[in-house]
Length: 129
Image 1 (spheres, helix red, strand yellow):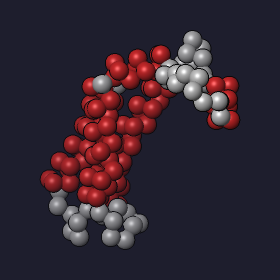
Image 2 (cartoon, helix red, strand yellow; image 1 turned 30 degrees about the horizontal axis):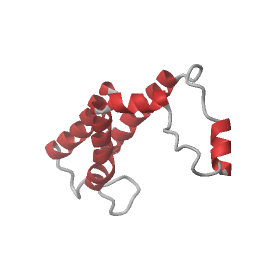
Image 3 (tube, helix red, strand yellow; image 1 turned 180 degrees about the horizontal axis):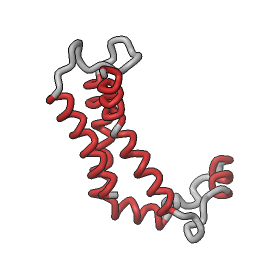
C-alpha cells in the first residue's frame, strides 16, 4: 500500500513538474479533446486519487482489520433481504480468496491511473517531433 501511495504521488508530482518546466504554445491540452486542459485532469481527478492512496496507506491497519473480520453483523432486527441472501452466497472465503494478488493488481492499476497525465505529456512530445 505504501508503494502505491508513493508511486501515485510521484506520478502526479512528475506531471506537475514537467508541465511547469515546459511551456507549451496554446497550453497543455488533452489530445483530441477540444478545450480540455491537462491541469483540470490533474487537479480534479488524478490529484484526489493520489490523496486517497496516501490516506489508505496511512490507515491500512484499520482497513485490513475490517477485511479480515468481515462486515459487522446487524443482528436479527430485520428479515434478510434478497440482496443479503445473494451476497452471503457469493461472499469470498477469506481462506481461499487471494487478497494479496487482488491488492497488487489494484495497486498497479491505481498508479497507472495516476500516471495518465504523464502518458498525455509523452504523447504530446512525440506528436511534436
